[in-house]
Amino acid sequence: MVNHKGFKETSIINRYIIDDMLHGCFAKLPLASTSVIGESVQKVPIRAFTLGNGTNRILMWSQMHGNESTTTKAVWDMTNFLRSDEVLAKTILNKCTLMVVPILNPDGAKAYTRVNANEVDLNRDAKQRTQPESVALRKLFDNFKPDYCFNLHGQRTLFSAGQVEKPATVSFLSPSNNAARDITPTRIKAMKLIAAMNAMLQEKIPGQVGRYDDGFNDNCVGDTFQMLGVPTVLFEAGHYHNDYERERTREFIFLALIEALKTIATDSVDRFTTGDYFNIPANGKLFYDILIKDPHLANPKIGEGLTIGIRFKELLENNLIRFKPEIIDIKKLDGFFGHRTIECTDSKDFDALKSNKELYDLILQAEE
Image (cartoon, rainbow, N blue to C red; front, side):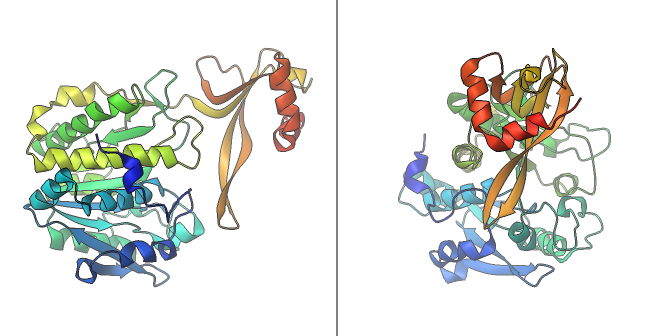
């Protein structure tokens, strides 16, 4: 298995990744391999680059949603690996040609929002293509004529890998290409590729890979490209333990990308089955960032037997992301889990809660 540390792009870390931060990354590439595929609403160039010269053509794009940056980091880690002297890297580049768009939505990335500068979700604009970013991606798709598409996204911390106490650190989807969700040859190819990545990831994060919902929406880019006959894989970079900056998750996305490329390059897709894909548990929504149990001991206005469920709101402050706690639920939360659980009946937990002024004040102000 590839050692991620040797290829991690250290110039881009944490959650706030914008186009200006990528100048050094692009500068390391041959000028002839880079291109501008269009402009954003605010006239920021949308940059892309190619790698390899093989017959398997793979198009991938990241930060279609500007606040989903983990896969952008992993893409540059992947690029460092592919430009190395590793035998596997040379094999991949001999068999594959990659077209990579690191940030499709540079305006959204700068504002740290899901949408673009016109407040349009680009992943709901595949059909009408009202936005310049959507037009640029579709034109690239038509011109490049990929054999595979990798649609690279990020996933919130609430998702579980099934109905168990395991976070969905990585999730995948072979999107539907019609309302009936038929298992077409195009979908099958994407499913088998996902199965290959899952088999590898189970060695690193057992039980922490999920399968994203395949409800059909022809306004979504993945569904559209799947409809057009190109096997498309949705990647979702999720949560790993206390890794809110998603630095460990980027490693798992990096490993998944390399595994997918290796599987394509070695013509090994058919070693896997659709059954392997459907054995991946469907995503649940069982996690809170923090659970406060027996909060009535801190705030008597809250009834006994209830639990407070808190999720973080991500705020851009001084070019960093602050995770602000917000109360989502105050009720019996049996069957739900916390990435952190505070038991108010435990004196150490209770003291830790009181020492966190922002969190403790939030609990004191809470009412059922």
